Length: 127
Image (cartoon, rainbow, N blue to C red; front, side, top):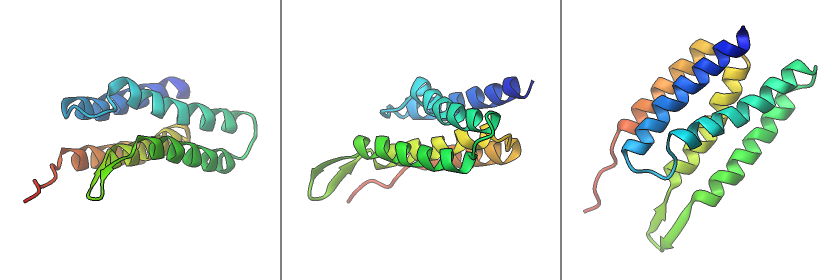
């Protein structure tokens, strides 16, 4: 039963955050958002079920999502960097996936709301 609750929360969070990114025409949309959450969830969930150390697995999830995020960042010239927020978004999603797998539901939902609000804030136009 816990698995079903976890997955429902995961898909809802992924849909909410991914929809906001899609609406803003960003690189990562609903599918990618849910898949990043799900990947982090799977590794953390497995580590809790086989008697392993979830902290060790989560450390590897952090490294892996950082690696993926680093590949998303592009530098156009000396003053233009693209997709930095998207790279950080992947990193945060991985953390949320781990939290959901650990059953930290209220915390996951609260952080998802905070992330959603942050994504809604538009950056200022350059002068």
